[in-house]
Length: 317
Image (tube, rainbow, N blue to C red; front, side, top):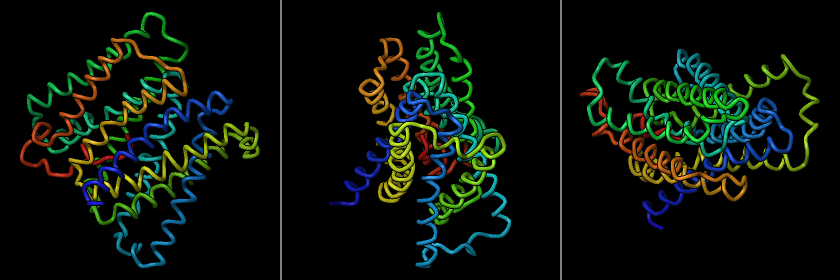
């Protein structure tokens, strides 16, 4: 198998696994699991795997903690708290109130936020074509939300707001990673930030609940949680990283565009969610808008824009 085909396979696999995240969370909620318990158990399971991977690679000499400058360790801590723990907590909390397909598309907007953050950070203007793409993306979001506005369910606005806040924080996380760390440190950074996230969620849970409560859920809930931790967290993170290494960020981003469509299909099959014509049109607008924003020639924010920027190299959505 050629590198391009292997890269495409890995990237599509990662997109499919990520697509199942929201659906698995909704299935776990149907079994009585709450957002905090879900994120806690997810972090414990996925964090354990990341810890093993980190230890194994350090033992083999592939990753060396001393390669990370001392001043960067504080950055790792902040990125772990905000990039994984807080983003995940807000995302899963929001999904408790809204459909998987809508939650997925709100989170999918993070590249539009990256463009605006980079423009503000570098004090450069956003191109007219980028503004058009941004407008299309958010018009699509309004279209997806419109059918719910006449009779919004309990917590609908709260759910949308929480997921949108998660996407915003994730965009800041990507910009921070892109500016503070070299690509060679990314695999080690992923594992280290996950360790910080695990510690953060354990502290959060211990502060308000008894850990014995994590044993009170159904067998189905734990099964969905296991799939969420392994197949929708660990596997896609490494698969997408490998895919980007083989294809480059631009080509990998094209394959990653299939993620929302996969979420729609999984939501229809496993959750019984159905989108009307207006919502489908909105999803198409979001995908088209985000695809344009991910194009560096269109989303460029002046001379300081650089290839491989976070706007198109993130793997979390």
